[in-house]
Each structure stands twice: as C-alpha cells, then as structure tokens.
Amino acid sequence: MAIHTDPPASGFRPSMLINDTRYRGLTFQFIALVLLIFAIAYLVSNLFGNLAAAGLNISYDFLGESAGYDINQRLIPYDSQSTHLRAAMVGLLNTLLVAFLACITATLLGVIAGILRLSKNWLVSRLMSIYVEAFRNVPVLIWILIIGTMVQQLPQPNAFRGENASASMLFDAVALTNRGIYIPGPVFGAGWTILLVVALLSVAGVVAYRRFALKRLYDTGRILPLVWPSLLILLVPSVLAFFILGRPVTLDYPVLRGFNFGGGVQIGVPLIALWLALSVYTGAFIAENVRAGILAVNRGQTEAAASLGLRPRRIMNLVILPQALRVIIPPLISQYLNITKNSSLAIAVGYADITATLGGITLNQTGRAIETVLLLMLFYLIISLAISAVMNLYNSSVALKER
Image 1 (cartoon, rainbow, N blue to C red):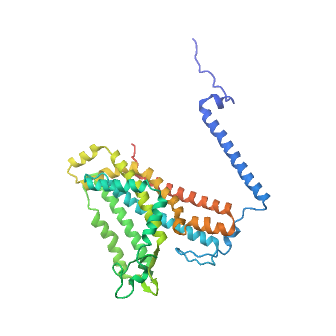
Image 2 (image 1 turned 180 degrees about the vertical axis):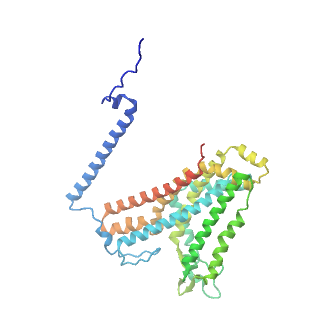
Image 3 (image 1 turned 60 degrees about the horizontal axis):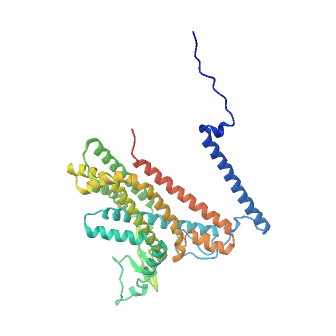
C-alpha cells in the first residue's frame, strides 16, 4: 500500500527576493528606502560641507537675541526688546488664529452655499453659482488685496467725533474704522475660572443630549427636539453661575480717545483682510465639496424620507447630510490644510504671521536663512499633521460601519 506524503518545504533562497512575489515588493521597497537614505545623507553632507567652506555653521543662538522690531497684532505680551523666539511665538499664534477663524467661517459659507446651489429657486442657485465660480477662479492673493483695500475705505476714527459725526458706532459698542474693527473686550475678575468650567460642562451637556436624541431616534424612531433643549442646557447653568458668582466677567467698551479708539479689542485691517479673503475663497471650494457630497446620496433616500412625512429641513439634517459627510470630509481636510498654508500670504497686507516674523524680519536681521526655513517647514508640517489627525478621527466617526 503506497503512502503519499507532501514534498518537503524548500528553504529560503536569495533568488526568491526577486522571483518570489511574496518578497519582491518588500525587496523593491527596501532598495528604494536605502537609495532615499543615501540621497538625504548626500544632501546633508553637501550642505554642511558648503557651510564649513564658507565659515558658517547651523546655530539657533539667534533666537535668544533681541528682536528689535514691533508687532501690532499680538495675542501675548511683546515689545521690541523681546527675543526672536518670542517674536516667532507671536507669529505662530497669529497664524493659528487666522487659520482657526478662516476654517470656521469658510465651513459655514461652504455648507450654506453648497446647499443653496442645489435650491429649486432659480435665482438663489444662480447667485450661489456666481459666487463659487467668481471666487475659486481668482487667486486668493488678489482677494486679499481687494478686501484689504475695501476695509481701508471705512471711516477714520475722527469721523465718530462730535455731534456732527459722519459715522456712528453699531449698538454703541462696535466701531468700524479704516484702522480696524473695535469691539468690546472681556475683563476677567475673581471667579471667572469657575464660570469657564460651568460653560464647558454645559457644552458637554449639549453634546451628550444630542447624542442621546440621535440614539433615541435610531432605536425608537421618535424625534426629540434639539434646538430649545440645547439652548437651555447651554445658557441656563452659565447665566445662573454668572449672577451667583457676582458677574466675574465684564466688558470693556471701545471709546474714542484723541485720534483713535481706546479700550476694547482691536481687530486690525490686515487680520480682517486675510481672514475674510481666505474664508470666501476656500468657502467656494467647500461649497463644491458639499454639493458633490449631497448629489452622491441616492435620490431614493430623499423620496423615501419624504414618503414618511418628513419635512425638507429634517430630510436634509437627518438623512442627506449624515450620508454626504462620508464624501465631504476627505476633501474638506485638504481645504483646511490649504487655509493654513495660504495664510503665509499674510505679508501682502502686513499681517505678522509666522512667515512674516520668523521667515521675514528675523531672517533678514540675522541672515540665518537655513535655520529659519527649517523652523518654518517644521511648523507647517506639525500643524498639517495635527489637522489631518483630528479630521481623520472625525472622518472615522462618520464612516459607514460594516458589520
């Protein structure tokens, strides 16, 4: 009786790295990695060799030297005697500020424009089409200059003076001038940290309630109200804490003093121009992303929801947008990254971002081009990776869950 056995397994041979499909891909990737390492090593060696030949070396000691220049728009204390490192931090915060504001505003504009572009109202849809085509086909630098010029046409502070003033403050609290917008600023007293904690807990309560309402909808089909309960949860605890703690936060209103306004918070013309330009420009691209995401949802979803008696607004909020987000979020990440990188055009209107401070004035004063450029590259790399990480987490939360 014959006994059949499997042939003995052959051992590993070097030729399998090329001939065997199980190892071929890894082999080519390893070769590419080695070549890349050698190329980077050659470039770095060439850089240090040229620096040594010129009697130079890479050093960041200049960051501890006095900057010697002023920055108008700043979120932290700074003067001309501060260090270059402090100036770079001011520019970094200014970049994050305008990027944060522009991302929020552009998202709101894009979502509204994208939905209205699909409106059955011919006039509304055509107006949104004109907005999208006009703004996304003109370079953002042009819009920065145009909006900056328009803001500078606002009245001078002297126009608000006297009984025959040609300009007046909005609600006696906001002044629109050619030097910027002056708004009331907060003044924090004792107990404001407790008020902040209450406000944050109220926000967490709103999120928890909306999640509960959504789960209730999916489990039972019952729709709970969202707007007024969310407002109650958000406002009532904070308002009660505000009065119980003795009004720990008050407002400092802008007042005309001499030739300019004093008090409050000034939003400078460069920040306004950059903020609005990035918002309306990127909002046009986001509008197309939103429109594409909505159109990607099968029309039968809308018809099925309408047959159940849902109104158009609820169909959009409960049926269309949750499914469209899976298409909208990935390109939205790219738009947020573009906003952050396009903020480097701030130098065109004199806004002191990280590129204008570290990559502009500091570079010219110290002559440390390599060091400053490396720091700029590192900053934009870190902020881009951070934005991508946060948005990818959100994208995972709205992605279709497979069973």
